[in-house]
Image (tube, rainbow, N blue to C red; front, side, top):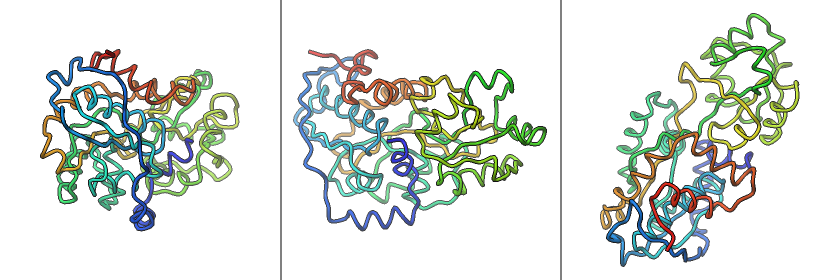
Length: 329
């Protein structure tokens, strides 16, 4: 699941365009109506979407499915009839659904928009500036970006709390210093893709002045990385995603990217522009939800699915009810 998720979120531009062509005639899966008996809480009062028929979509990894379910449930509580077409294969199929109007809303990531869809090689370090640039550039594609969350699903390095009791690493600059002081101490477990991407290991080493020998870098599947970092001494550090639920579950510490090398992947709702023009009240429904979505919240919700085996729809609904956004009738 996690390995597929990495390919989903980090699809390269060339591969993305090829996939778009391959999917252009496929259309969406049929989907199913949301039948939850939910009513407005702090959002959706007066049912401003009554009479609307809206389709929500998502990519096919846990976090994005959870976020897509949140949108659908908020729309449902606000009076809309909602068709659930979440869990589409790959980034591009969901993206094309929004662009073409086959779906009305989903949560997307600013880094994916800027790099994968819009074709820019260099990310913008400031999260708000990154979102604003994506929002402005994507208008021509008929896509409206709503206000972003602070949820940032980006690359990071992590270390087990147990091992870090010896090294006291806090930032990637600390890792660079350790690699110079004691080169044999820094062993790093990564996926093949991260090991070769400019926004992965090679770029990180350059940005932080590291030069890790090939013998210190071990390549493996994503799921194994978390286990190896948590339970063994073969990987002092491992490549992770900042919102992964296994970070808390396996007692890992995420190191601070103090030079802001890795791109920002803040989650924000994207709406088919014609839909938003018809129902501009969507912004008032989703903005409060986005304001509550943090990286830590995502870790907790993702763990419920990926560690505890709960259903993404129920995880989304429970959180929305807990936060008071909607109510169960």
